[in-house]
Image 1 (tube, one colour):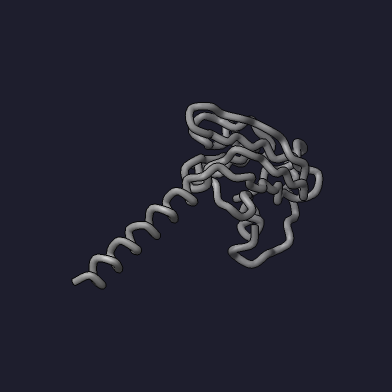
Image 2: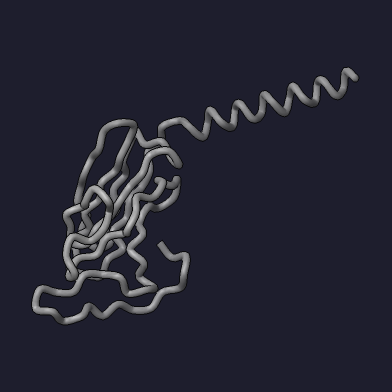
Length: 135
């Protein structure tokens, strides 16, 4: 009986430690995975406030004070980020919904699906194929 109580107490303590660590604020990395010449507009919702920033294609930014899996982000190309995270016009691209911020790279530009805005002259952007799961 003592072993069972001790095991239960240890499991509960471990779960509390994991929950505390998971909800802790961290510095996370955002990446613009759009084709060359594009600019990604990011918005991050954090506990009642929102921050916005732009990144050029291939650029990364470390953002402190983010709670992974609780805070949300949206990225649009070329922007602006809309409240519903949907493209405001046909020649724009947005993720379509706010996603949880991850502890890894945060970029859902979907290179593999060629989901990027077209150039102002209407010419489609050539995007090389990438494997799914590539951020």
